[in-house]
Amino acid sequence: MRTPRTRRDWYADIGFFLFAAAFAVLSADSVHLDEDMSRQALVVDQVVGALGCAAVFLRRRWPVQLALALLVLGNPFHFMGGATVVAMFTVAAHRPLRSTAWVSAAVAVPFVLFLARNPQTDDPRTGSALTYFALIAGSIGWGLYVRKRRQLIASVEERAAAEAGRLAREEIAREMHDVLAHRLSLLSVHAGALEFNQDASKAEVRQAAGVIRDSAHRALQDLREVIGVLRAPSVGGAGGTGRPQPTLRDIDRLVAESREAGADVTYRGPECGTGTLAAAAERAAYRVVQEGLTNARKHAPGERVTVTVSGGPGEGLTVEVANPVADGSGAGIPGAGQGLIGLGERAALAGGQLQHGPEDGTFVLRARLPWDGAPADAPDESA
Image (cartoon, rainbow, N blue to C red):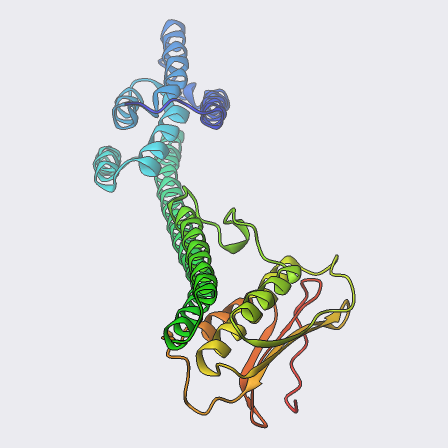
């Protein structure tokens, strides 16, 4: 099925037609080098040349056939030069290299035969013929250059699309880890408490079962949303997933959920407004708190957790989650060990930095993020 011409294609074809016509007009003086040409023959030559220029509009449908026909007609008719140059360029730029080679051979053979006749260098017709062959060779070379450039651009665009897809998949993987790890760790804590508290009353069991059901429902809902993003026609990363993106205000909900699960969490939020805070920084801050609370439930159950979010315009945003270093007896919640790696990538994408590790018997997860989108200052290594 033939692809219809676009507006750009029409502009290009009209431009090539005008080039061929202008070439015929500007090279008209060379026709008079043939002193034996009658007036009637000149008129016929001009009419055929005009038809050749008009045939340029057929170059997209029959490029090889048009080029060969113009090459053949270019011998008896002088006004075919411009149209032939356009046709040869089209073949070199758009057809396979094998077709270009065959059509180029159709030019090379007459050129070799012309040189074999040992033309006189002082004959004006010799200069005209050499100019014609040089223009044909130049049009082939230019067409090959355009073909190579187009292939290079297509290759770069393909690699860019593949890289964008890879980054989007990594972002969705981070999103799945951050969301589901938090939900499932809450569910595991409640289920573990229900399992080991054999003396719980029916009301306590009913309450714990309700929390477990609610956590499982939320986890399934989050999973559906992420899978919906994966099935979407285009994937655009966290900022364009179509899901409501978390902000600093949602940290209160995270803390409340952890407290409902029995965690001892102290939260100190920012004292100033967040109207100018970059959205990427808000998302990263939320995920840092989420991962810190999840890790505390996994590795230091029952320990006090302190969440601190501070900063403001000009100084950046600092998010810190701290809990006593565990003695090795965790809650038995499995982990893939990718959470902190993903957080580091997320912080870097937001223009910030992430630190984590023990400090004076306390495990500290700390992120410094830009307030207005500018890179955050380097963290204080003495902290």
